[in-house]
Each structure stands twice: as structure tokens, then as C-alpha cells.
Image 1 (tube, helix red, strand yellow):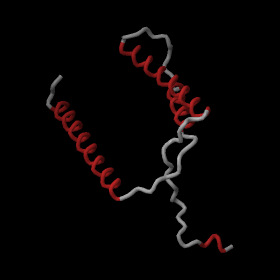
Image 2: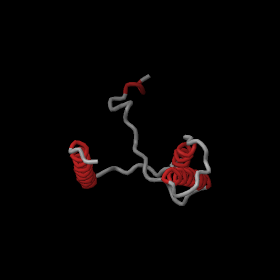
Image 3: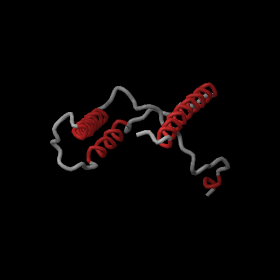
Image 4: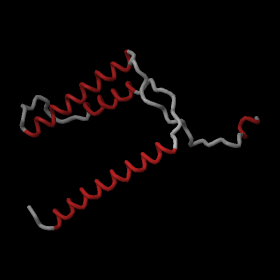
Length: 120
């Protein structure tokens, strides 16, 4: 029973997997096909709502989104082993995150100014 008393055991820790393995096998290519069908159906529905195409799907359903999710799961079924993140990559990720937050804050600020200025 000494295996249960590991000093460095963290039940919430898990290894981050790497990118999907290439070349794709048949399962991953099936995921690409299923995800593509889902993306096409979502795109056609959006174009029909805008009025650019005729509506050939009656009521909107969540099925295309489930196809996208299923395709993603199948593509990610084979993953490369995780790579340890170095300090340079952490600094780069932090910088990209700060830039993204600044852009989102500027967009949100502009939207609030437009909303509360009474412009129509």
C-alpha cells in the first residue's frame, strides 16, 4: 500500500497533449470530413439568414454544431506527447494575451461609447 503515499502526487495535474499526429490516419480524416460537413451546414444556414441563398434547411437545429464537435474529437484522437513549455514561450504567451485583452477592451469600450451616446 505504499504506492498511495506518493509525496509528489497531485490528482488535478495532467499532461498537456501536443498537436494532432500527422500524417492523419483514417479516423482523423473521417473527423475532417464530418467537421467539414458541419461547417458547410452552419455556413449555409448563416447565408440563408442573411438572405444570400435560399433556405433549404427548415428549422435551425444543433446537429451541425455537434458535427463540428465530433469532427474535432476525431481529429484529436491521436495526439503527440506534450512538450515542456520554456520561459521564452511563457513570456511570448503572456505578451499575446495582454495584446488580445487590450484589443478586446478597446472594442468593448467603443461599443459602450456608441451604445450610451444615443447613436442609432
